[in-house]
Length: 297
Figure 1 (cartoon, rainbow, N blue to C red):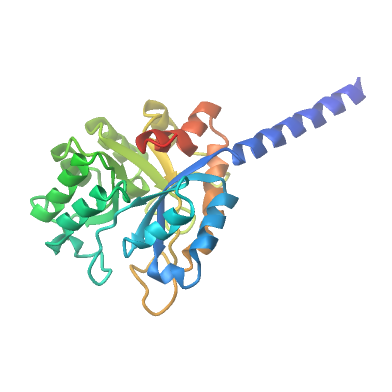
Figure 2: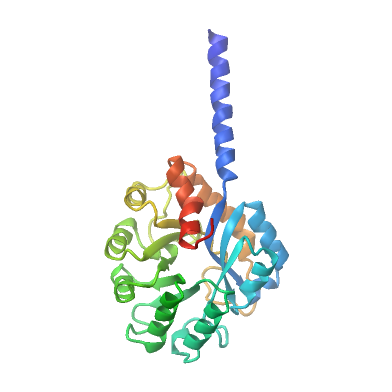
């Protein structure tokens, strides 16, 4: 009897390990990836694709700086990579993109080409800009809606109300809210309730830079507040990596961006908490929600 108990214990452990291994080899969708001029200095397109393959990323949303750099990854893996158009077209600067009158026509041309399937990452900041009445900003969001192209937007604000004003005004535009807005579950929940056209992504800058409480605790378990919110809106959460380094700098001109060196750790961070969720919920967050939003199955 003791021997049987021992074998059952071993078998349970093996099954558990196999389940974890299977989960880790499940397809992954990453909706927040950069490939920039400063990253190409140290990470070639071929190396970037190899890292995605290594982590079983079957769907990768890539923003290029300049925008065309995303197409270098698409060319190597067209079934795996989707390019979004990041409208930072002059001097590669993001703080004032919304003042450039050439941006709306550039976005229209990019989406009409069929090479780009979304817009972003675009950065906006309450108190800095753009003004919510900005013609350039509003034209970009309207053009995205016209092409049914999602907009991945990064907002710097202390609560959800800034983003609420944007998604309410542009109810026909589908938004992916970067980094869960940089806010806690309570604030994110208010936005999801207010705007049905918003999806949320967890970009795993969490291990390095978190504006508040990290999504997962020290054991790699999703915090209760986030779990409760995901149960309410299981179809509206996704993951991202956001492989940039150093994360504290907007754009470093004096050294290369080595963000792709961190990407394995970022996926490990996500896998720890996702693998502890119920299987259907885990599969949704890991892959299915993004594939449905982006019409890639």
